[in-house]
Length: 345
Image (cartoon, rainbow, N blue to C red; front, side):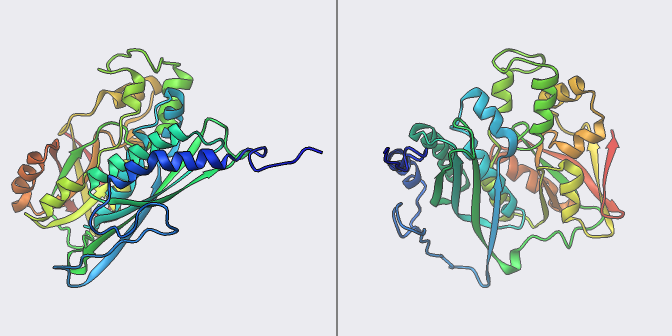
């Protein structure tokens, strides 16, 4: 009678151990002096530095990458998708003024390949270094029969810190405040179900070919990693009071901006006040998509919005530009009912 093993059932423990060995240096490259234990323990240890913090508040966030993973599979490119996962998490907690401290990841796959997992974790580590946080742990699960052999899913978890008196809530946003928009690198990590449906399924455009009006191949454009805004926003917080921050992810302008608005104001967005990357024009034209649907789905070239007092607008703009960010004055706060109003210039 044949003796069954875990490997016969589809789980290769030795390959998993090899993956841990390959990713170890990427993980260690993110460690700060606050990390107390090397990779391999059952939990990650992080010593809080509370110097200058009167009332410490921990802020947590979790997210994944969504169907952008399909592009990584099609292109067989896995070294940037991890940055997307980090960005989706750290940009979220940044909206409340939190400094990211540490990050954990979860990767599940049908059949584990050590080099592929290493590439994914390298992207995660790269994102953590950009965000200034430590990758202190994670989990890799091999689940044959649940995922296809060449496919995987990824999720991330971040914990940040903010002084209670400095939590950004949006509660004091008022009429006359201005809205600054930080440029995105492209689609970031949302709207890919619609983008794939239009560009790949309906139009059957070539991922590796040139497509007008894109400057890069379609695949290169679609796989661009999500921008991480931690450094830029932290520098602004040291110079002016930020009243509200909105991370423009799934749901676009219409879902994310109202989350920071008081009940008695609207956000008026001036169309034409920033450069919309050509990938959005391509999707809209090829899919015959109405403008309002685009702004309900995509970031349209604005990855994050900051609301500041009118008197602080120029200072905030200069500080952001000095960090290398492309930033635009894209709108203003008016009396209203907690809504987004798109205004033609």
